Structures are given as C-alpha cells and as structure tokens.
Image (cartoon, rainbow over all chains, first blue to last red; front, top):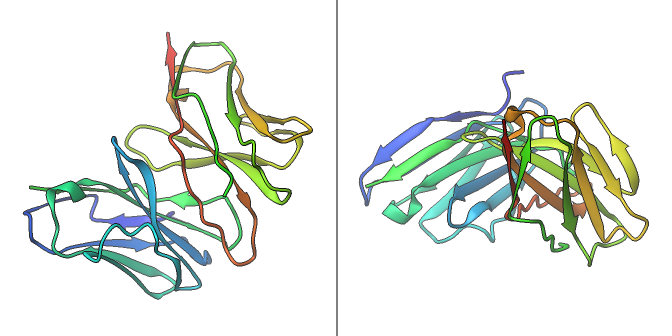
Length: 113
Length: 112
C-alpha cells in the first residue's frame, strides 16, 4: 500500500480564499484523523471519523473549517475563508477502528498570505 | 483522557541510551500507553505500545512500573537519525474508535 496520501503537499493562498485539503487513507482502514501542527500550538487533533462518520469535531477551531468523508477512501478538509493564522502543516492519518497505531500522511504545508 | 507530562527536550550523544519518562498519574485501568516518533517535516510514526511491565521491539523498549503512573521509552545506542520529537499518549483501545490526542512531546537531539 502507498500509505496515506495527502494533496497538495504545499499550498500558498491569499487571505479570504477557499482552501481544500485532500486525503486518501490506507485501504481497509476505517478511522481517519485530521491534525494541524504549528510551532506555537503543537499537534492538534481537529476531527476524526469512524466508518466515514464524524465522531468528534471538538478540535475544529471555527465554522470556517469543515471536513467531510464521502466514502471510505477519501476525505477533505476545507477552510473558507482562509486567514493567515491558518498557516500550518495539516496531517491526515488513518487506522483501524480502536487501534492506537495510526499512519500519517506526509502533510500539507499551508501558507495563507 | 489521562493527562501526560514529558520533558520538553533532551540532548544525547551517538551510541548512548536515551530514556524518556512520561508521567500519567491519572491513568485508568483500561488505558494503554503508546509512543510516537516524529522526524522533522514528517508525520508522527508509531513506535511502541504497552499496558504493563516491559515491551520490546526492533526500535525501542517500553518500561511500565506496577503502578502504571509513568512509563519510560528507552532508545538503545542512538544515532544522529534518532533526532526527533517523541510523544507519549495514554488512552483506551476501544471498538468505537480512539481519540488520538498528542501532547507537547520531548524533543531529542542526538549529537555526534
């Protein structure tokens, strides 16, 4: 398996624009996690899904952030409108439900100018 | 979720053993202890997991005392490539899923 695949790897956008980050989990995994990492705040869990259903979105910072998982092989994290403080590395991870061994993607480095 | 406390950073030298202790005083009976490693510009990677006593794999050993209020990750004979941030997580293995929450981690710098 190619592992968790995230796209794009880098994204530079202007403040106010919509940003969509994409994730393809490992085939067969049924838990999916979205994280955000910054120097100041560390690695924050934004939301996680089990069997395509959002279980806990308490880490989503604002209504500007939304995440979907329309099927078992694809998830998106959308920021609309984007702000400079959203600049961070966003990671997607997947695992089997109930397992603490999660596999992370390479991340998307988002810069909002 | 049990709160975890780790040192912010540690320095070591190549060939030495590195021991990172994580405190989790309010660990629950059903909680497992999991450690992740994160290299610069990469996502975290699972290293090892345990419930009690000692667990060893090809990468590290995990020591858990009888009271389980702390755990120690041991990295034998580190090399420069072991420079990374190491995270301790405590939680329950649940059929309904796990909320994998990372704390601040310990930044380990291995020097030549």
